[in-house]
Length: 140
Image 1 (cartoon, one colour):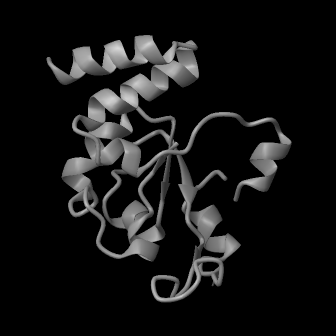
Image 2 (cartoon, one colour; image 1 turned 45 degrees about the vertical axis):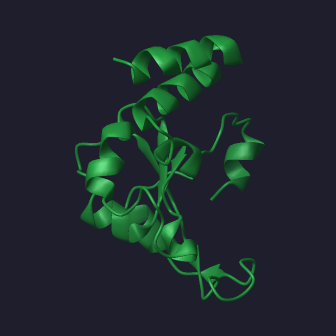
């Protein structure tokens, strides 16, 4: 899962200034995106077939404790937006994988990084082989 929902609680986030330029090229390499309703509705093209995990909580967490959030999107909006996950059901059904955001989109080569992580998750590659893949793609 590629998480790009940081801005709602961190404010301006390096790498997310232009999601259309910095993040959309990574989408083809991700199984799932975690994002906000605004990003989903205004930036992600309807042709994207990956699953969407919607950030439905929010609050004034940038100045207060992050755990003081409340639900900001109701279930009807989530269904209308065709999103696929809150985390409990996925875990109960045996989900496994990783959730990364800044480690990918703030890396020196985001496309190489997401492909290396994908190789570890889907192809059971070792960290050494994934690093080789990262280096190869980065230097192309």
